[in-house]
Amino acid sequence: MSENTLRVDIKYGDISASFAGKPDEVLTAIIKFLSDNLPAIDLAKKISLSYDLQDLIQMFSDYVKITNEGPRIVADNNLSIKQKITLQLVGNKIAFLMNRIQSEPMSVQDLINVLGLPGKSISSRLSELVKAGYVARVGDQKTTKYVITTLGIRWLSDTLTGKIRAD
Image 1 (cartoon, rainbow, N blue to C red):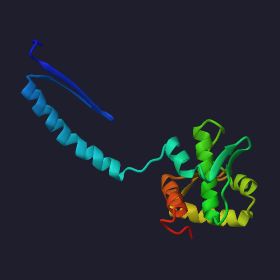
Image 2 (image 1 turned 180 degrees about the vertical axis):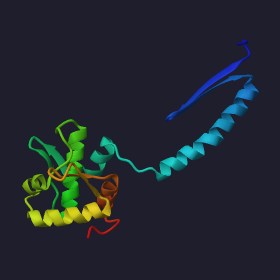
Image 3 (image 1 turned 120 degrees about the vertical axis):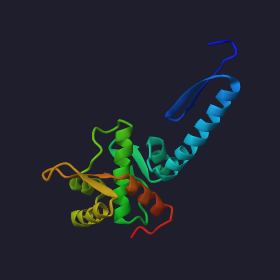
Image 4 (image 1 turned 45 degrees about the vertical axis):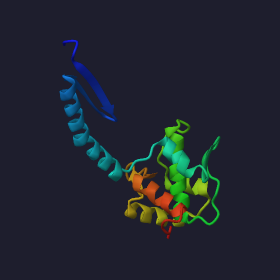
């Protein structure tokens, strides 16, 4: 490379590029790179839905706490059974991501023990939550357990903030 060569490295999220050459050529290449890639990245971010540990803690810290006994719902006044179940599953997800528990999925019996609600009510609401795509079944027929889905997190957040009804 001659001493009049401009070299530029760009990194934006997962996308990176390097440009080298005459300054006007590099500038043109950078502008093309940005116009080709940034709108797609911004659009992808608009339609992507995912939650990391920090998001979950920020969204649900008023409702769930991680105790020595495991995740527990601390604000259960006026919550529906569906909200209680999904909050407990979110609590388990948070505790698992924090390495405070060994396994994220919960069985019906786990939910009965923690929530203190009748098994029939929990089973019925779980079936509705699974059908809606808010909770997923994991495991085999013998050891069916449940986890919250990304859509379930969104639904729960929306119901707790009053954007939609919990039903």
